[in-house]
Length: 163
Image 1 (cartoon, rainbow, N blue to C red):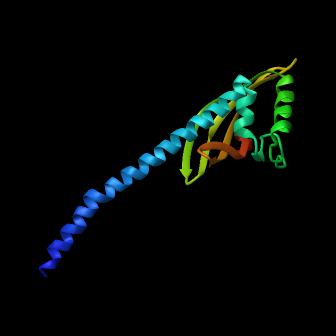
Image 2 (image 1 turned 90 degrees about the horizontal axis):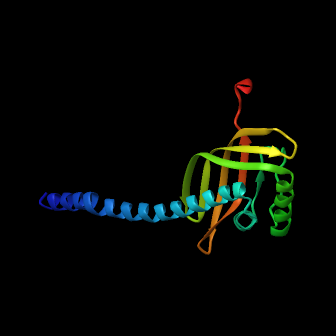
Image 3 (image 1 turned 45 degrees about the vertical axis):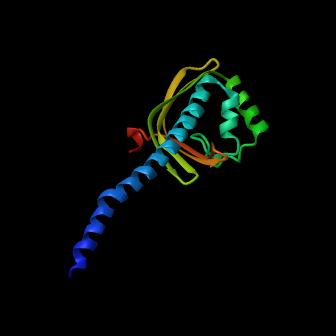
């Protein structure tokens, strides 16, 4: 019975002092990864508004997924083909702006998740200005310290007509 207070004291010290320090360290490391993921995602989304082909291609090459206007998955993006497709897209648009509305981020190992809501404001040449609201889910992989997009999904938010 004399060992019980020592064991209890040891367990109490462990619970009060050691575990919280270990959790602080784990959360601090994750926070750095989440901050880097957030910065990459925001840079990528802003690049679409800025028509910054270099950033779009650098972060988005290699990704596959679904856009809001595609019933079938798009193929994996190859750099030159992807750049050409984005250039053709911008050639038909007078306005294309992405605005992040809500943002959520999570990092698990070398996988980063970004999801939330955004709006697209578009105007095709000789067309009306239109804004649509989207939900998105983007999956990133961290390779050699760099986050790149590997999978994306965007879909229109349902309107009251669909509910």
